[in-house]
Image (cartoon, rainbow, N blue to C red; front, side, top):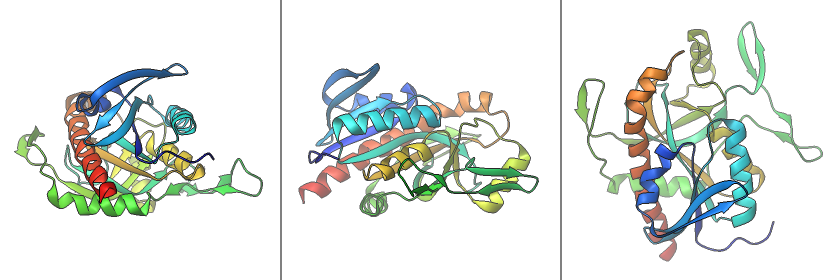
Length: 259
């Protein structure tokens, strides 16, 4: 691939509600369009950024990620958004820094649940995995940055509290809701913290194209078979929490690069 310009961060979110607050912090915003996809470019906390919405699901996430990576040659990719709370330790608006992003529908569905398998990749002799770690440099910076971050209080699920930022496992597929049997199988085999619909595909694209990436997902509703009404109630609180952390992290990234 051609050499990437230094200091350009691509920020991807699935929905406008997840990217809106990030874009509101951009100075000298410049709207543009790549193919049919609108984006906003500018400077965020001292870092040049491109921000765009992928749409929901693994195909949309992969399509937009690949297109924007190939065109803009970013130094790194950040994924910011929401996901259902799979692990009870995650509260609404707690933001998870993914240490592993998993396709939870990759493999064979058997009577005993999923058997996770590698599949044939696009290059001869190459197999692609169902799980992807983030870039080690970005992960280390994110973990170090937690200590200097103070989230805004949130009122959710009958209580008011200051949400946290913590590391965990994120898992994704095109399933918006999942059955109790699927939840039990995922908990046994993957032990995820957050479930959503794009990050595993984006992580795979970034890994294939050798672009450093990291995933930030704030918890919304609990993982369930019919999350519609709960997501509508809690999704925006989670979107704001993830966006605030992402804006803060970009500032930390800009500072780290300068020093």
